[in-house]
Amino acid sequence: MNIPENLYYSNEHEWVRVEGENAYIGITDFAQEHLGDIVFVELPEPDTDVSAGEQVGVIESVKAVSSMFSPVSGTIAEINEALEDTPELLNEDPYQNHILVVRMSDPDDLDALLTPVKYAQLCEEEERGGK
Amino acid sequence: MAYTPNSQRVAEEMLHSIGLESMDELFADIPREVKLDQLLNLAPGLGEIELRQYMQTLAGRNLNVDQYPCFLGAGAYDHFVPAVVDQILQRSEFYTSYTPYQPEISQGILQAIFEYQTLICQLTGMEVSNASMYDAGTALAEACLMACEASKRKQILVPETIHPEYQKIMDTYSISGKMNCQAVPGRNGVTDVEQILALIDKETAAVVLQTPNFFGNLEEIERIEQAIHQQKGLLIMVVDPISLGILKSPGEYRADIVVGEGQALGNGLNFGGPYLGFMASSKKYMRKLPGRIVGQTLDFKGRRAFVLTLQAREQHIRREQASSNICSNQALNALAASIYLSMVGAQGLRMIAERCHQLAVYASNEFAKIGLSLQYDQPFFKEFALKVKEPGRVNRLLLDNGIIGGYELEDALLLAFTEKRSRMEIDRLVALIGGVEHE
Image 1 (cartoon, helix red, strand yellow):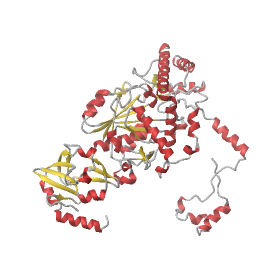
Image 2 (tube, rainbow over the protein chains, first blue to last red):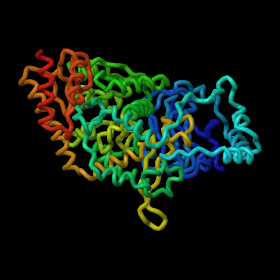
Image 3 (cartoon, each protein chain N blue to C red):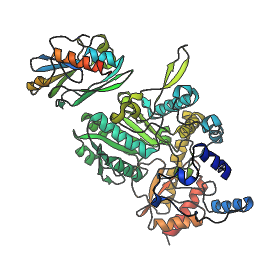
Image 4 (tube, rainbow over the protein chains, first blue to last red):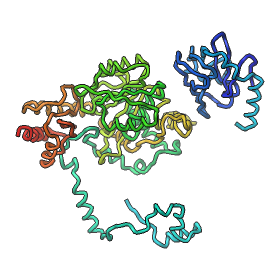
């Protein structure tokens, strides 16, 4: 299971990479592995405000449909439009292909996220729990 | 339909096989206070001859459109249904099949639905159609929910020129809190465009336009289309499928979702139902379309095959996140529409639409000749509101003379003209109404 060191993680299996005031958000290797082949990603409208924990998109795979939540509050600065036609990028390299970028309004939101070590524990627990 | 109740002996055997002594034991879980503890108050049985006579007397009290020329429309229309429709429809393969729960094994019904979807797309000029909804009203309410879900807004602008029954269904759907319908008064029998333009803003999920509208008048679409799209809301159009034989398609008007009553397409009046709501959208919104969608694919041997597709929208997969609870459709009515459309063809549909319109224009001219005028001075397709003093009285007189009159509005009678009507029938209608009005 690939869990890069330089990222923040959420309980919902999203990763966050911080560049200045921007949070790049995607789904983890664990998430893509469990979803199976991803066939559709529903992206939000740019320039809309989101609060941490709010649903911002939907990921549809051959096995399931899952909601995607923003781990931080702010304004949606960018969406990865390449995913509209090639959603499989999320399977091929989940960490090189972000889903959206949120311009953060409250960087303290990051404190509530998981470290790589904590996230690895979460994955392990979920594996054992049979999820 | 045959109904054969179980004999006493069979009922007892069935009870014994599950270890019960009596019917009371079987229904022990139903509270005593809601059980009927007496026999039903029914008259003694009749012999077959007496029963048939009795039922025929009852049936004879109905008026039907085969006996009487019908000028009543208001959402349900007496269009001609060619005999071939029933001939194909009543094949037992179609007549007895239920909505496919193990869909891929039912290739025949899936193909029938796929053909229907293709025809609806061609008719409306849209990219994707679902397998049909219950009727136009439910299709419209579902379209509104869909627009709210897609735009993440709640406000729907509803001109009061929309069919009043559809408005009621939309109000019922609004109880969910997921959408909020704002009624906008009409002006001279059409949508008040200026008022709608003033109301459209960033909170508007969609504007609904019905054309021809409830009063039969054609609506102006372009300015509202531009305004709602500028604010990133959706345009929902409600259309009469027959009118699309001659009118510009909703796709050409850049509508996002199109719904309508499909009864006019090969379905009889059926005493008010079952009907058929058709529903189509642009590709952009196909993942939000409610109901079933059949897709075409190849099987493992490379042969053409059909599947239920995009099911992730549906409640059994999406659970509480599904945007609709409808996982069924009106397959038999949709099949009637497909047979009808493929029989009449594009050219035939155009001829039917032209005939309806010409008869309506003829009638309005004849009314004008005797000094009667229309309630609204607007372009119409096959239906218009005629100003009369007492609509109820006019209708009674028409009925006494073997004519089914129009829908009663305040100080007006809404009259519909299908291709089944003749100039002779219209001449009689005009003479009779003229007689009452000029008393």
